[in-house]
Length: 156
Figure 1 (cartoon, rainbow, N blue to C red):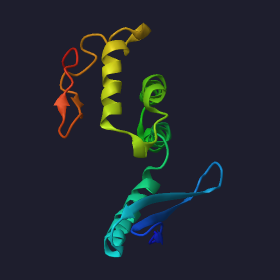
Figure 2 (tube, helix red, strand yellow; figure 1 turned 60 degrees about the vertical axis):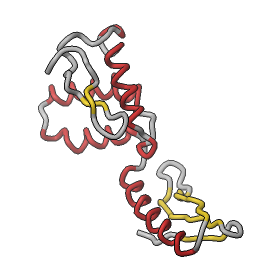
Figure 3 (cartoon, one colour; figure 1 turned 180 degrees about the vertical axis):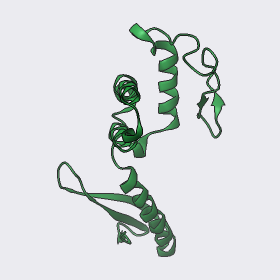
Figure 4 (cartoon, rainbow, N blue to C red; figure 1 turned 180 degrees about the horizontal axis):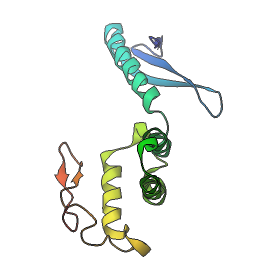
């Protein structure tokens, strides 16, 4: 992994940049950048953090739909045909339409909470609420700092 670079952008402003590699679709270079204000020493510490973040971004780059496809490809060889079909149905009918377009780096707990709320209100057949017993009451939502029960219908 690269070390990144710094360039002066003003009297006390430095732009930090880390190369992420070429975009797989366009071939254009991708960069993670951040502007910081302060001393060179502070900027170097921030650059170290940015390099670490870039390493995670390389692993997580893409959308949730991309990750779900990769996960199914990696995990499904050990699954039965009916399990593969069922999981693909959940991913294609529920997860991808609502969350698949989101960049993983920008996915928030609020996005997931909104999806949970959608499922509770219109996640059943014909956009009706989920049937009782189809949603575990103990399913956590992660708004804020700690998990909390969503208050879903049914028990499980």
